[in-house]
Image 1 (cartoon, rainbow, N blue to C red):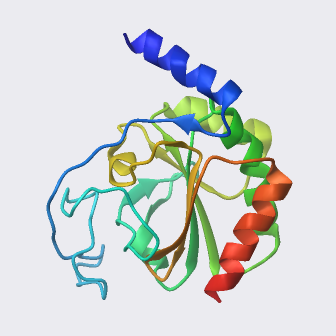
Image 2 (cartoon, one colour):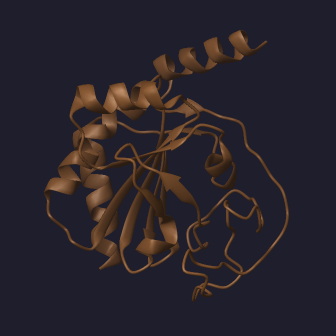
Length: 197
């Protein structure tokens, strides 16, 4: 069954502008506590690390669920560490053609030198070696994190990947499912980021 599901997902990348995934739901709420142990200014923020908060399909205006992620660089970061910035949060996989195809847009956005922008790409449930090898071979310098168990992905349910959110000071301002080519996506994301200023 797993092989059949994997084959169907791979075929979807050949036909559609995105790759399909399953939606997950749950219910719970709690107040976010930062890594320093102090309460965040965003109340009742879903938190992957503590398993608290409502898991739901996200919409523009929703608070972005918090999480801690290990990056390819070995550093660990928390989404709420960037609540004073604009975050371009992307969910992707190496087997997803549209995901891989749009990644040069992220590198270009990073090279624009916007100090208020943090790019964070979360790999969907692939092993670290696969992710490391891909990032090294492509030479990408933006932040890439591992979600080997799918715990972060569970708080960001979507019909498919690439799944990209523009987050402004902790709140979701734009959502994209699927992708065209890197040039098109660069302009789409740049426009969304500029609207946050």
